[in-house]
Image 1 (spheres, helix red, strand yellow):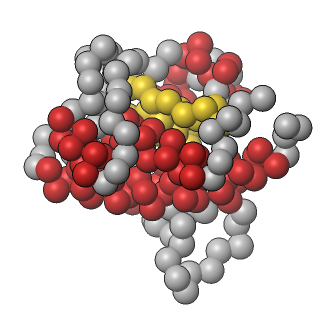
Image 2 (cartoon, helix red, strand yellow):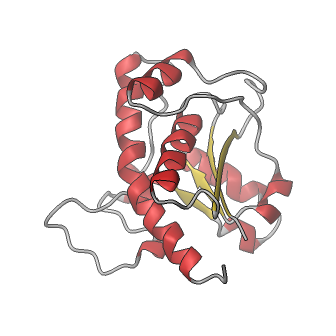
Length: 180
């Protein structure tokens, strides 16, 4: 059975396609591509059918990631086939939880940066499945780089990469509890 993860931002052209590409690379490096499905969507349909923002594509390619992407809008019916819905900021988190058809679906929605690994010297007793974080609750957003310059996309990539390792650990833990 495939464990399915969907990253969600506003228009599905900047942050979520970046997170999708980075996490897909982590999954492939771990040899789990046959067990973990990765995709992305936006809370709105403004850019549906469009490729990722050229700055997203440029930053991804420069760092060795795949940038093939077509934007789409998240649909509430997807909750039934998804195991984890990863929001890129608190606004997305709230919007997705409102869309959730049931409480069990709302519990599938998590903030990406809540999976960021603690820095050296930071000790956490919380398990990976509970999304540990060294950040304050209000510091978990991946800022939208759309209206800024290219350096905002680089900053976004750094945040996504930092959280992807912890997210992969959490997904591995969930896979360990499933029958292959």
